[in-house]
Length: 468
Image (cartoon, rainbow, N blue to C red; front, side):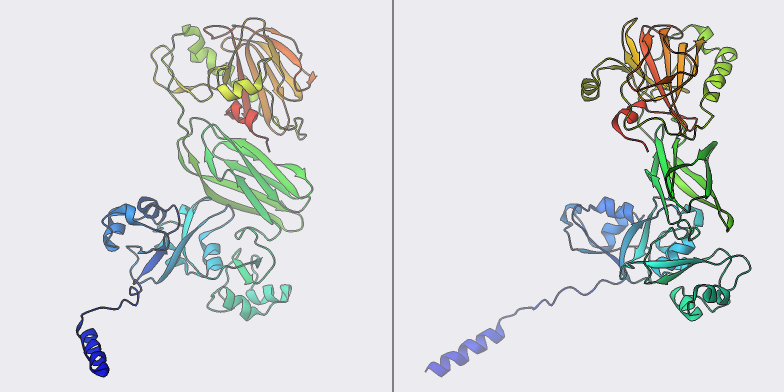
């Protein structure tokens, strides 16, 4: 009887319909593994595809159903297999050098990133690559003009066929002049498209912003001469410490957002000159629009304002080799700096505000920070420097300019009294003048400017950050 019961139970189990899931079939095509915090919109932006296409190809009807670990097929890349990820492109990398680093043919790298022009690979670009084993380090070599791969191999005591294999070349004849070649397993990770003597290039921030300074810091041999240019501004480099060169440059507050070439020239002892240029991205800042202002027409007459602006700007052209300031700048006022920075109640107008005068278009911007004050209030030097100008101007009124070295200047306007002379060395916190209402003003205040590389930048950044 017991055996019959077991047979009946076994037959019943066999007759019950069921299905066994061994896991979903691996998706075909390039895929991305969803990470914590990802959104469908963010992933679409990351891979430069339509969110609707991304949802459709993955049968997603509710964007909120995403969870970490899910695998999404990326549309528009048929014929490509593998797990995709993104890497940030640094300054000093080119499409060719990135192709070598990630072992991806240029044509495939271009397709993954929808690139039609190599110049689109700007510093800060989010580059789509096929995920592979992480390369811990490499040794970089550049082919000199008229040099063959065989000569380069002999010079560096490297098997020429290792160079060919590691760089996916057709043969020892396939190298180009100034072509970056990599030997994997090295100890360094240098800027790929720059000479091996340039061991590090840092642009900070990597995404430049309107009205903000950026720092270029380069590690290179002592005795190296470095210069640069972005738009109309010349980059001047100073020896920050042995082997490290730095430049501080402002971005004009009215610069149109977009891509601009940042060019560097290196004169390397014993090697000669090397030039490199790469696009950088300049982003917008949400500067507010002030109410239209009514002023004395004389103070906006180009016949008067242009010569004055040229005089004021020319004061900031000389570059003093010595850095005179140390640490953060101080507020140039006897007001409590902590209170002012916490409440923002000490500024009657901020830097960058778009302005209209006497019914004009908003083609003007506020070039400094207006600090509240009464006639006769103290004006204090925010940092050590040398006075390079004192005088009376139509728009700026009683004005002073101080050189802090390395292309950094500060200006003080609308003073009732100037208490320093040209050539005076001043220290942080020293009394240099008194608040007034001279020049183009609606009432007493201190208009304070900071210049970096001949361009006005937001003074508040200098109260909150240490440069360089």
